[in-house]
Image 1 (cartoon, rainbow, N blue to C red):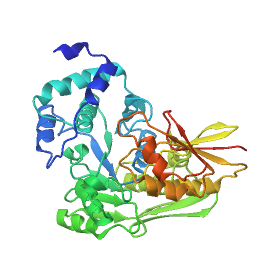
Image 2 (spheres, helix red, strand yellow; image 1 turned 60 degrees about the horizontal axis):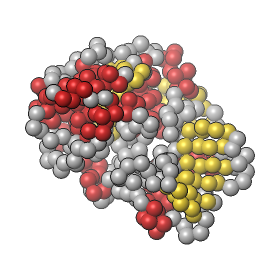
Image 3 (spheres, rainbow, N blue to C red; image 1 turned 90 degrees about the vertical axis):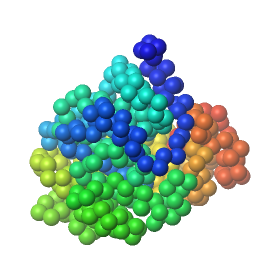
Image 4 (tube, rainbow, N blue to C red; image 1 turned 30 degrees about the vertical axis):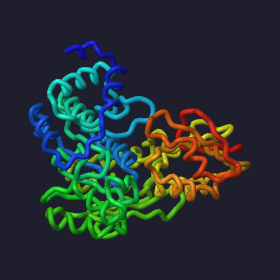
Length: 387
């Protein structure tokens, strides 16, 4: 009962001390959720999985639904600055007081069950959503899919944005194994939208086993960019031409549109164009200053670094490119650096403010020997160039 006096920061500190758990199933998690009445929420659920692009897909889907008049809850991760970024109701973050109340409830109900940080906060998110009459809830998968905490929910529609090599110690060392784990979010008789052309065959295998209906890009739905300032989207009976370029990656905008149309939910077609052009997400090739130009990006694996490299090529660069670089130690640091090193003139290596951060000694071994400097500051991958 003493936790009733915990402040928000005390709760976060408490949760961050939770140990990782090698969970074999979700039975204990489901048991707690069932006690709290979280497995039978009446909302329509989207579960968004994949290696890259989950956050931007969620952001676009959330805004499309809000602009069509729906009441929407969004659970996403990780946060950039503040924990409250992870949960939104009708486009707005909740107060620290709301989170404190939810944390107390979950902590009281879990009893002696050992939970990870992500499992605890997933239950907390669902509890907060249960306090509102939401039409739709969007869940972003944290890690993998099959054993991810979000998978306690039987979603109405699931999404796999793509399959890349990441979190290999948990998900497997190849795309086949990773695809199998991520396909754990599939449900019998439900639609799963696939946003990658060359999806591993393990995804098809799991879909057949679970009798899930796959809707694949370039097979069942299509998008194409024919002009610099517009693109087309084709989906069954819906054809949208000359759509405005979005501020997030077009593949993820297309995935969100496809998911929306396959859901069967009524959509305000008149607002789609204006919605697409105004959705943005912090830390996704985000310009925070123009002179000198400073861009923040959360490229955290090779696929994301490749996208960042392509975005750098699209801008007019005058002068040198400087990268302030911090990364988690369980990431493919060498792969990320290798993908970007031809674009970067000077590297400034930094430790992140987490015990999962790659150390300066680690970065010394991975970064180019010359033109590398070391800082003790909290930063994410970024780019600075003089105009």
